[in-house]
Amino acid sequence: MGLWLVDADVLARSRFVLSPLIETVAALGVLSDERPEPWQRPWLARHKAAYRTYLAGDPVARAWVGSVLRTRWMPDFVGMPPRPGEGDFAAELARLRATPPERALAEVVYACRGEVPEVLREAELADRIGDLLEWTWEQAVQPDWERRARVYQADVVSRISLLAREGWAAAVAGLLPQMRWLGDGRLRINESDRPDRDLAGAELVFVPSSARRGWVAWDLPERYAVIYPASGVLAAPTGAAAPAALGRLLGGTRAGLLARLEPPHSTSQLAAVTGLGIGTVGDHLRVLLDAGLVARRRSGASVLYYRTELGERLLGAGAGS
Image (cartoon, rainbow, N blue to C red; front, top):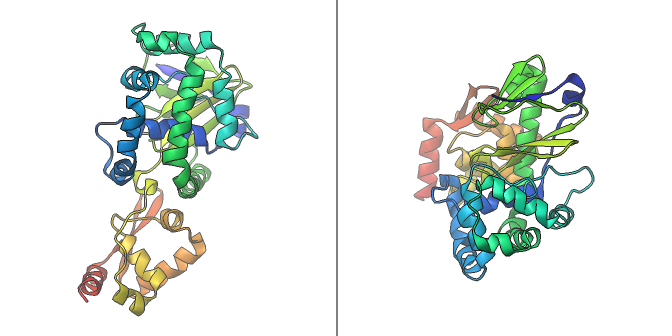
């Protein structure tokens, strides 16, 4: 069993953070995924052709995607936990590029169980993979980073609230498929037969991302990270545009919120995907609730809003006008 031993001091210092570099690594995985999640497909459609063109012209990047990205082990130098004060992609990428060649190759050999394409053995891996990630950031992630950051901040707020109400067992449940808080300072990462890791004195961070599966990472001995998939609902704008006639009736903001409630959303999720304040979203939802156009139900720790039959009919009538 893969256990991290996490004492009270480590828990007290642990935090949720965002990382542009880790999000770029996750986005690269999405670009290479043959079975993307439904909410990822519009973004993927915009960038897939350019990504394939890039790979066609870079044999190192092509070998990396075809071998390393298909393993279950992310080389440490690529997905290292962000450091305090870095805060931007350039600083994180500079640290990645500074990885000694022997370390980068050793981690790739381990990830691939020794079956490493020759072109990767001969390359300056940190620089060449840095080039691939820099292209991915500039072309596919940076233009969308402001919205993604809002989305992930909403996810973080939700999980911190859950932590405050229900404790660590609830907060980490579902971050990774096999992750569980077992109590007594024991965090199960997975069910693999590996020696326990004692995190005493280290920093532990949790990083939301668009990754399908997530992973764990470390910068030994002082920093560990859990990179987890944020909610699919959060990862992209959803809902059809509100009909103009409905906007004139309800007001543009309320009509837009009503149109977005497929699938159901929480207040914080709506705030993230619209850029509105949580209080503003709550005020508009209250009006829609009082009018019978939306209803709400609890799902775990969240309250989700959804359209009623009346709301559906009104939205459909507006679309037909």
